Image 1 (cartoon, helix red, strand yellow):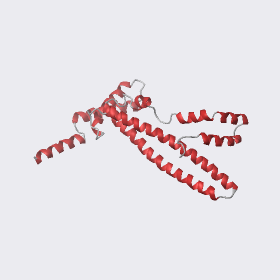
Image 2 (cartoon, helix red, strand yellow):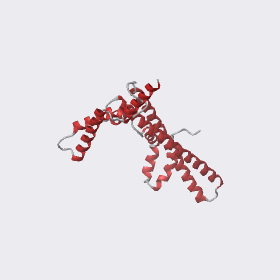
Image 3 (cartoon, rainbow, N blue to C red):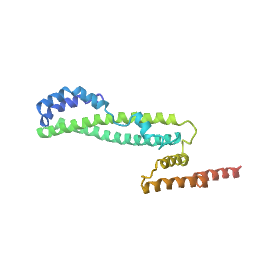
Image 4 (cartoon, helix red, strand yellow):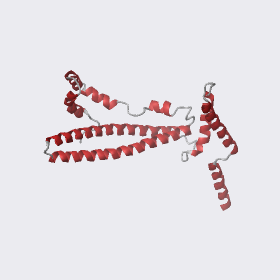
Length: 226
């Protein structure tokens, strides 16, 4: 089985073809840098680091409490799950094309078609290595979101229904936004922030949220059945 995410052979194989693009001296230097370039390709940042996840995605003004942070972790993890599944389908198609090209090469006798099949095969193998690299980093982020979900879920909020935390969380968010408004803020921005803030405060005061009424109705039905 070929080593996953190893492009050394692909770089070395492609280097002679770079004569069509680069000067001879540049091709020579490119070949000498093969190990370094493989290292760069392997350790390059693909998706977000934990640092970026904590301060950029889960910043305290936008996600002001544990519940808000937890549910954003759920959203982010789900995005990466769906993307991982899509990548898996792409990888299967790519591997099927590799097998198809290998069979074509075994039977082909025309030199031009043989060369085209070889180029397509190299391209597909490089694409497979890229998919493996992306999948590895997607899995890293999926595991990090899992760890963060556990960290923020301290049992003080509903982790089954995202709706139950949002009134309090969005209230805090809108208050944070209102505090950043200045005389230089645009009229639409002020209108949007203050409009949402006042609406949230009205809804909280009136108790008109549907889930609150649903809970009251369920409690009432339970009392009648006793």
